Amino acid sequence: MDNVYVVGVGMTQFGRMLDTDIKTMTREAVDAALADAGLGAKDIGATFFANASQGHMEGQHMIRGEIALRSMGVGGIPVFNIENACASGSAALNLAISYVKAGESDVALAIGAEKMYSRDRERMFAVFDSAWDVHRDKEIRDRLIELGKSVYPPPGTMSDKPYSVFMDVYAAFSRYHMARFGTTQRQIAAVSAKNHRHSVENPLSQYRAAYTVDEVLAAAPIAYPLTVPMCSPVSDGAAAALVTNEEGLKRLRLDRARAIRVLASVVQTGSDRNASEVEKHCTALAAARAYEKAGVGPGDISVAEVHDATAMGEIIQIENLGFCAFGDGGAICERGETSIGGRLPVNPSGGLESKGHPVGATGLGQVHELVVQLRGEAGPRQVEGARLAIAENGGGLHGIEEAVACVTILGR
Image (tube, rainbow, N blue to C red; front, side, top):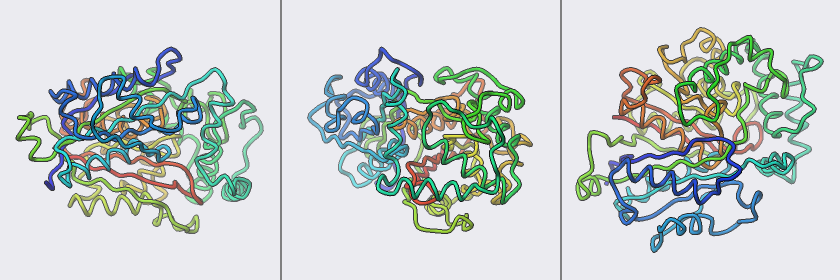
């Protein structure tokens, strides 16, 4: 039972879907995953339903998964509701993997669905206000301002329009990285331009317009050094993955050639550390554990999907994943090494910045992309010869880093 495989993936288009409810999105993603695997709803032994915002947005604080799934005829099985901020989808996958590995069921479903976009912009952005310690919010804000104080925002580079508090968080991280390592705003913009260029070839992306680096720099500001195209949008959407063990693969006569093996799935919470101790970042620690479990290293990876809630987030995470030395992330992005056709393509889907960021579905959206890539089914955005893939998905904020990090390694 040690071997676990992703045998089916499904995903809705991410975007602003005011007239589509969460039940409809759940059905679309799950039906797509079942069709992809060649299975029926009766084959699902347990479901792990990821959602972070429905309580805030709709008042549905309990039994979210049971309600969403029953409406499409899935019932009579264990349903577990998972909420782990932006890492909810990857956490659901981790538990589904553990469930089939333990032999509790041959097949388990991880599904993330989120209905976040609203005409009430203040309510929409307020959903993120609880993704840190609400009892220490002023202290946290002050600490972040102190973190980025060495780089002062130029006049006109801070928006007066409402936006997620996490854009201020990433702006502080950006300014710290700029002051310590010499990262430039143009390097950050290069990440954004690359991801928007990748998304042109992804029909499920929220945005599919290409930007040049200069266009990214000239766009409306959010919080210096971040402009609008550098930041992930508020999104609706759903994504799903079906996992099975060796017994299920044989019993259900599934197509082994399209089954993608899970080499590692690691969840790591943060710890108290100094900002200077970048090597102790929770994602760096999670990645080290994942590489050890998988028996591979950063140099073996063919393609990556990382949590670019902002373009700066991608730079930080590729450093944490060991794709370059700490402080070199901006430079390798500017050189094109993380573009499709480069040394290590990152976010061929378009990433959160362009594909979209429906929080509970985000991690499973990453897995959807990597499974398609490893099967060689990504069409114009295909990474040639992809054999090993890694996904990094973070959630919330605790101290000076994400509250939780999930790292998943998949292989053909």
